[in-house]
Length: 468
Ligand code: ASP
Ligand code: MG
Image 1 (cartoon, rainbow, N blue to C red):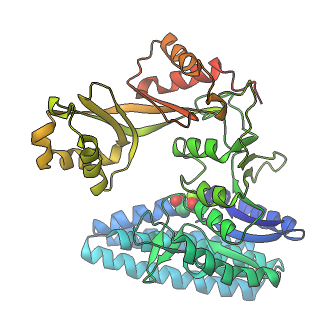
Image 2 (tube, rainbow, N blue to C red; image 1 turned 90 degrees about the horizontal axis):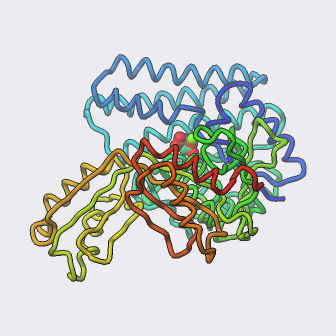
Image 3 (cartoon, protein in one colour; image 1 turned 180 degrees about the vertical axis):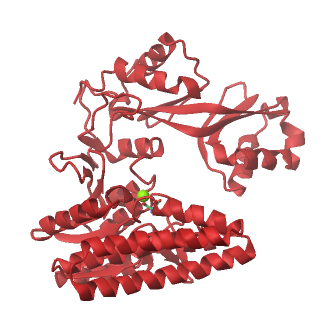
């Protein structure tokens, strides 16, 4: 089989887990063609964000200290995992050079007291640029034929939307094929940095947080892999967050469409766009636990399996959201009002997660990320349009969106009634409801304090732990 294997930060945390990664690659490489995608070591991307904040605040001492910590962390792993002295030296030099480069960038930020999205991507790229050569070195040390590339070197070209760049798929696929296929022919294992790419001018971009999953499926779709495996530290996608429902179960199988509905919510184990390339080329995606390889994990495929008893498969939530309701009598019967509202949000780069308008047309409610709330309010307040149509803008921050997911809901009457009955029995008020016409997902909004109880009630109502 031709398999793209992605190893996330959760399995790149210390000597033991990293050696476990190497062992796993060694085990599978004999009978398969492998392409490896790696994330930054655990916590490093967040750490880089912290260091840049210190740099913006001009804290040169702290920045230097933290850069040194980062250097030590990576050198320590090399010392513990690579035996051959020459290889060890080779990788140490690479790491030291990268750390010097990072230091120069951060000194620049200290002087400017500012970071642009472009520079931020450049800073964040160091996480993967540091981890990839280490994995390369470890694999070389155990005798494998390997080569390593950054995302850009592997051929991933994106637009210039720094922080959340979009791959230009045609050129990307072509370049990846040109680069990677000859290596596979020569039985060389390519090791590729996840998360990062370059734009058409050759500047480093990132695909958004958790973007290594996306890298893996982009590569998988380019080289027509048989499967993409996402190695992590949990057994797979689950019927609910086990922190909320302790008896939640791992889902063995799921369709792409269902998994996408879940990823947008929980977003725990998957970049929201990561499934797109795999779905397009019909490449199964497996989520597997590196530390529990007995468990086959979750397999995501094109096939929508609807078993009668499995109407609902999972219930997930997002908390860091806000509800905005705009209302005004001027909105009634006026075509183009909704378009205008969404245009204002769109121009300000604010993503809308959920929308609802009642048939009276006197108000429109929508959900956005909480971090975008201030930006959204300002955008409305300052628009000329506001005076003519909108009388009132109300906001609520202490809310959660709950999503009930399952392909079996399509065309099954009474599912919504059961969902809302279960929630009502807990005395929980539902603030807003939306169901896509795909009927794969019912989403609704409750107060954040009620969110866990609502999830537990729905999990129980549909017996999600018993159906597998
Ligand atoms: N290192 C990046 C992040 O933490 C990308 C990834 O882990 O997939 O967001
Ligand atoms: Mg990560």
